[in-house]
Length: 257
Image 1 (spheres, helix red, strand yellow):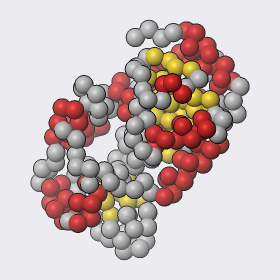
Image 2: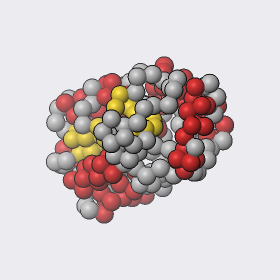
Image 3: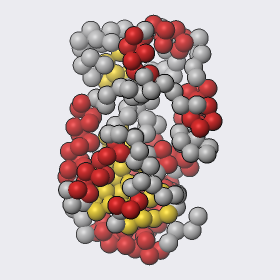
């Protein structure tokens, strides 16, 4: 998809006029790294079916059943496909572009809905993972996060060393509240932002999808990078139609970073 140069130029102007630029990224950010989106014609949920809307409640009710499935690797087909893609994925040029923007001081933070860790792999430092990380485990009682040492768990994780609470994968399940510390950090960045670059997300998943709208209500300008129109498009000051990698490369080149 060819990127409109006038849209890139307009985005560059907004970024240069801003003091606190924040990027908010969704599944479209990692498509060029080989990780499929969830929704849409080729999304893994479109092909395999969407998981239960009460996945977290089911985990709370019977965590032993969950860990039993993990031990024998009887996970849902969409989980198996996503895990395989995550194992093979490497940062794409868009991830590296955002890391360059942060290193230069232009970009203050990345708030991502992705659990893949590719922003950090590319060199981004101030990353808020609103839906968790595939590299972490988390206590659902006190929020303590620890490294996840293996993809599959051969036995239920021990109780939290901090509080004795229940431990699960850090990635947020359907019906699970966003950890308060993470949500607060994302809200602080949204409130600080005077320019938000919204990349590869339909903004349909709450509360993450509401953050750009809150920033807009507070006076921030919005730049959307997406291959197609989203519910947020009409609220944006600049829209760049294209993939995350190509659009962000164009921004970095125009910003002379």
